[in-house]
Length: 106
Image (cartoon, rainbow, N blue to C red; front, side, top):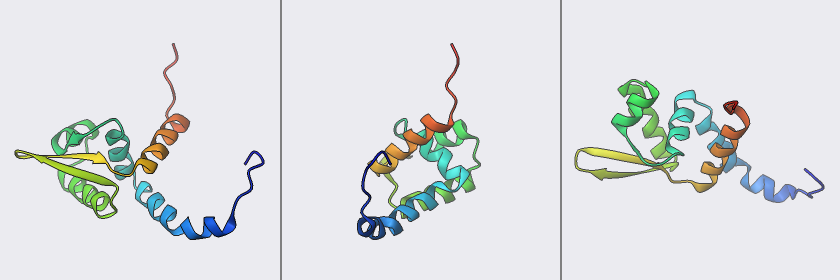
């Protein structure tokens, strides 16, 4: 890693938490949800329409993201809005997008 000395004790101490975050990303629906939420706060109905994920699946996956403390919610009237709560994970999402989503050719 460009001459950087890695600390095995530090890596060992944080490995479980990192693996848990990567497991959250390992589901296509959750990854799509998080990628969309990386662009800003969205309500459930907007996410359903944007991503074409059926409501039961959407609710289930948003529940997982809440349980894992990856997203936060805000209620406004009858709408629940979601946003990415974990800023480190947000950086990972941006990096994944840059690496794997092709840029449009001009």
